[in-house]
Image (cartoon, rainbow, N blue to C red; front, side, top):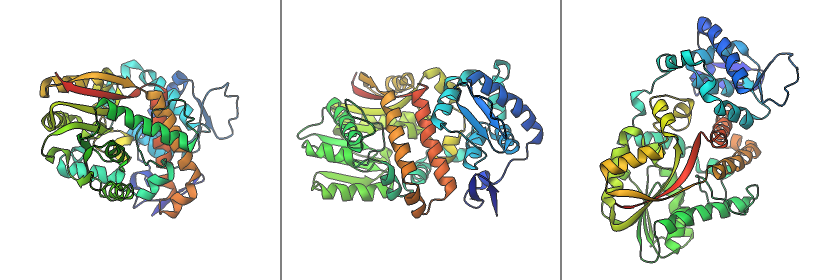
Amino acid sequence: MTTTSPHTPAVDAARWPDVARVPDAHLRARAARVLGRHAADRAGVHLRTGADREPTDGRPVLELYDERSFYRRLAAGGLIGFGESYMAGEWDSPDLVTLLTRLAEAYEDLIPRPLQPLRHITLPRRPSSDRNTRSGARRHISHHYDLSNDLFALFLDRTMTYSSALFGDDDPRDPEGLAHAQERKIDRLLDGAAVGEGTHLLEIGTGWGELAVRAARRGARVTSVTLSAEQRDLARERVAEAGLSEAVDVQLCDYRDVEGTYDAVVSVEMIEAVGERYWPAYVETLDRLVAPGGRVGLQSITMEHGLMRASRGSYTWMHKYVFPGGLIPSVTAIEEQLAERSSLAITDRHAFGTDYADTLRVWRESFTGAAEQVRDLGFDETFARMWFFYLAYCEAGFRSRIIDVEQIILERN
């Protein structure tokens, strides 16, 4: 069974059950309508419906095609319903990033303060299946990274690097500019971890192998671990094409099961996927694996500590559809874990969140330009809208400065 919308093709109910089904929340939808209009006013967003064509006065526009379904979803699922309504084609915006950025900037004022405590009572909570046990972590990583190497190749640059670039004078809109910025990011992290000739390096979270290749070209011996079979296979191919198979060993392995000691450990945008329950295990593993005198280089998305604490139990659209099991840490939370669980301490930090916004813009534009190839790979229109919303949602997070990204170097205390 499928549902239809005048703005999107039919939604496959077997593949997208909660997008195809509009929740039965008639009474609460009335309250959601009032709160939705309050939120739009507070954020300076123009809610446009039907034949409404009044001037927007420069305000970002949220075009409502199906008000009834939109508010029922909002009432039943909060931000999950907001995203599912977009996937269903019930609303859109001529500039989605600007709209989401404005909403993010006004996040604390969208709900009247007397009602804010009720969010924790009325909105969905994380299911137990969201925990990153060994089997859960494998399932969560596969959910995202094993979609298709060909899909990621459609919007990433030639380095196949799926994390924030570090732009210097490079033009973000130039494909080679993004590639050079990714290489700069990798080199800066390797420099911080003192990776060079003879270094035995452990990489936790392989990606598609670019960091391992660049480290090996410095003369390092690299062990890289991932839970994604698709990433492992393509990373091994890329390592072989670079003629570095003897220097790089890519393994399908949980970070908790890695043995030995290493001169340096690097991990790029991995801690966000670990989950708060397993931060102690992650930090203890870093401490156990790095040799005396060695360094750890992390790249992590971060958020302000108070916001992290307030959102730690939330179950969001991002958890449900894109990154199950994760939580973006604060630098304070990382410092607390290091102090309690290790002899490591932060010795250097570099934040570059605006670079992540620019990185995501390039990815989003490349993904949009590859719409036909995405369909040829077997991904339907609902997936395409989900992925576009995900990229725009993240870009808005960095543009609004609700989230940031940092390179963090750790050494023995």
